[in-house]
Image (cartoon, rainbow, N blue to C red; front, top):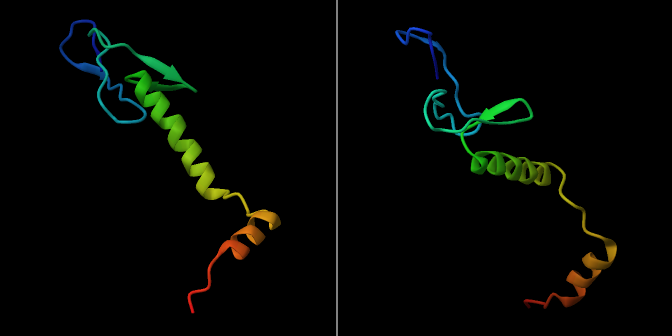
Length: 80
């Protein structure tokens, strides 16, 4: 949050790009930026990067190779 020069009003709200917590510019809270986005902590940056990796993995699942598919079929037991 950025207060005006006289401190009577708020010029701009600064929120974490991941969790949405308000970041106070004049407080002891550190402001971190990554890819042009402001974050409240390194944990939020790391979590966002990990989330993007998880989502990319869901969108592009790795196909089974023919040898691993054959191994799954031959190792399966018949339930009859």
